[in-house]
Image (cartoon, rainbow, N blue to C red; front, top):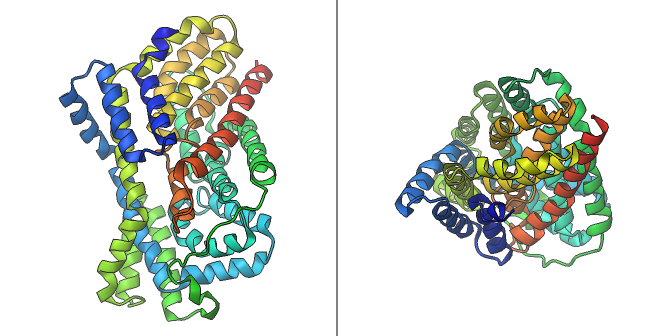
Length: 436
């Protein structure tokens, strides 16, 4: 197993996590880990940087989406619509902190399936609610776990929106590698994984982070005027812009184009004066620019990891140990999936890699089709919640850290890693035993 420990991907991911836990900036940690992994993979330094820079383009559309959506979020704050929505939520929940967590979790679920805008709602809705969370003394780690659950569990279980894409990728890649599977059956088998994550979610909010936590009440945007806000012309224009943003995104399958249309409506109908355009774009960059750039750098990191050939080497190293039993094989495949996804930061991009490597092993060991589906889904999803470079963690931090009191690693990544990856591993192993 020494060759496994010295694998460039294993070392890179461990180094990435260690640097992040030591509060080294995620961007720097990703770049350093990429260089170290590339050199250990016998690539020349110039070659590593070339692969890294060219690889960043893989997430360029995502990065542009986040910048434009950040500007859209800033415009909703300036028109007063975001604080108004927060006021409505506040009146509903009153002093019921768990209701607030469940409402935000429900909105996160809708953002994946019914209204697939992903993390775009977080910088719009969460910052104005921070004052209310402070009054209720809600531990923001519980909210981070709730948002992460809503962003992650639905695409594993619900066959709609991003879930349809995720499950479609599993079906497509399984068929390409010799296993016939019906796409509509995948959610049924994955439901056990969703159940495990739901248990982790309940543990997080009712046990781990149930105790009150004190935060300072710092002024955020226009939240101090929240009580005086009423629906006006600017609000209706902004709502129209939001609807058109969603419609264009669904019609063209382009989130950047949708956000651009939304901004055009806001400025075209003068919900916000044109002279504030530069200020809003700057605020958008400040709000989501960091998340966007981390996604770019994460794509570069993933490109370097693939170029080292370490993924195939990892699987070849552990394959002899899998032959003893299906349970051992499942555990080892899940561990490899965890390392891959922690580094790459996306479940969707991990599926094609894992399918090519894992399906021959599953066929050789006689895994049932349900077991194979669950292993691939769990191995791909592992690490997405908890990865410093995943939008599942970057999104919640972008909203909860609007006042600078929520640490990305210790308050988002570590809690979500513990409460979701452990249940995923346990339920995946149980499923292998059930679906023999």
